[in-house]
Image 1 (cartoon, protein in one colour):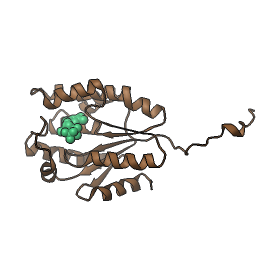
Image 2 (spheres, rainbow, N blue to C red):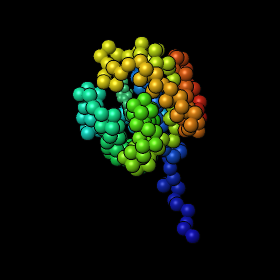
Image 3 (cartoon, helix red, strand yellow):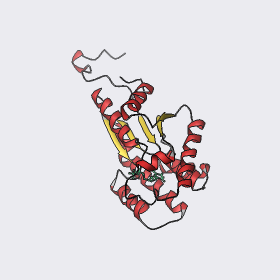
Image 4 (cartoon, protein in one colour):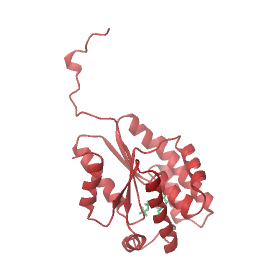
Length: 216
Ligand code: TYD
């Protein structure tokens, strides 16, 4: 049996539980990025190492793909799905997996559920096929928790920026289909996806999210 380690090697830093991978989903304008920042602040205040990132993007390759997919020419739905999956593959290998391995929490603004809702359901490519493509791209890495910030598509549209990107320019029925798709996903994965009411003030939403994560 090994002797007990000398007292001087005892941990003096903050107590750590295992790292969390949390993703945020919702329509453009739902307030996801504000919630990523508010949760990151809380976790950092609790002494945790936190990495925040966004999709598509978060790496050099990913930012290049972002430019192409959001501001480039029209493309087929499978091209679009493949580009999002490629950006995601890069983000997972370059940023997310290394961060989790060193013990950091990772908060990501959009992840696989975005592709399932937008490309799988709203573009009609099929949930199973888009999921399969993405699970291969990320080598099976799924989030521990996902918060869906729910805001009807009219309210989300009203909050959008003046210069919409290629996806935001889609008609209202596309955005309504995405909204519906997200609600369906939350019903299918009730343990992983928690829906929160996005019409509330940001601090109220943040408090609710902290409650779901047992954080003070
Ligand atoms: P986002 O970065 O949230 O937009 P912004 O920074 O402009 O608020 O997302 C960009 C757009 O890409 C958004 O309309 C949703 C779309 N999208 C997909 O269609 N599929 C995906 O897999 C992802 C990640 C995003």
